[in-house]
Length: 130
Image 1 (cartoon, rainbow, N blue to C red):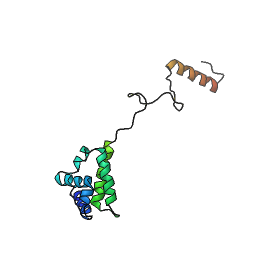
Image 2 (image 1 turned 90 degrees about the horizontal axis):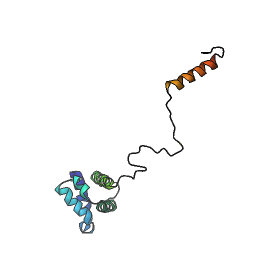
Image 3 (image 1 turned 120 degrees about the vertical axis):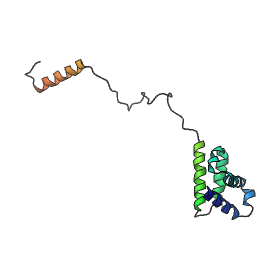
Image 4 (image 1 turned 180 degrees about the vertical axis):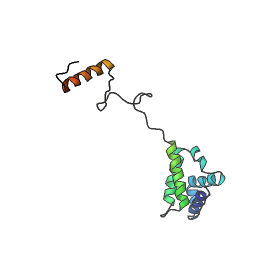
């Protein structure tokens, strides 16, 4: 957390009047000084995207480690904001049975299995009748 805040402060200090032009990053800097990155989840997706865009434009290669950590934290917070992908099919359905690539399995009772065993035995030894 201190590494992220220090890197952001150094980036903002490296350009004159950057705090007035990059207000989202200036607010983020104050947030990091006050309490940490766990508050990223309280930010809106639009704010997170703006912060990421501003940070990306401010960083020059190779990026400092703290800036990389900050960018990763912002990306993770933004990812948590995305809604889950929509489900296909009814909510409790595990699989769809209306497709061509499914295998149908049927259970046979003992009488069917006995008949199959007799038929197989008759094929192996046609002279033997049970």
